[in-house]
Image (cartoon, rainbow, N blue to C red; front, side, top):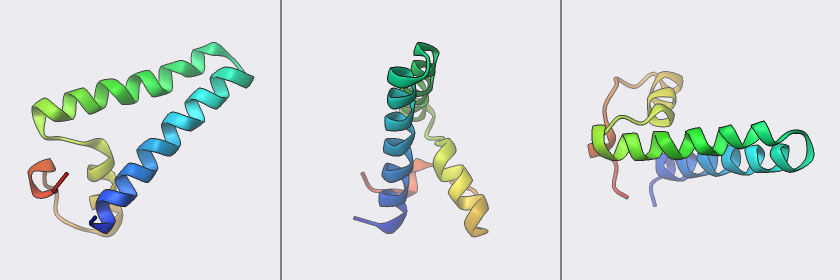
Length: 72
């Protein structure tokens, strides 16, 4: 698996887990975090735009591109 795909999966997984833990121990409103991530994942399936890959591109100084360049 490509390193960028592993980074993406790690970031998304960590955010979902963090939202669930904060909902369990702090306040149920934190369930909005995993819910919004789920919506963004559905959105990216239709549009090809993923905010995590966009942020990784900016962080690494790569030109922008969509999910079609990534094997899943």
